[in-house]
Length: 121
Image 1: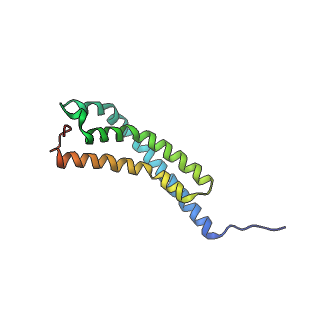
Image 2: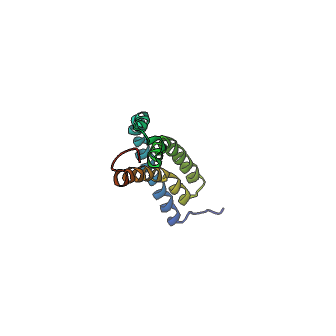
Image 3: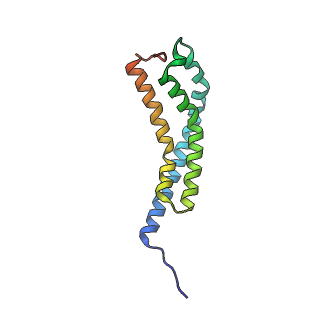
């Protein structure tokens, strides 16, 4: 009988990936809850005249609306990739909501700097 042993390095990599996925799933899942009221109020960003043509405002609204979907798809895909032993891709997939958050923050900063804090730019 031959016994196959998994190298300790591979076990450590798998455990580190599992811990990251658990933490990312919990944090991004919790962050979906405060995004829901923001999504409901995001239509009011288009109240000021000219804001419906403002690219930063549209970017911010799309980022807010897409966040729950990106989080769900990213976390589910990450766990599927983890089960298939594609650890780097699983970490990247679980980190997709960070990109979504950064795009929203960039839109807010752009409006604050170049539009004097107005949604119509």
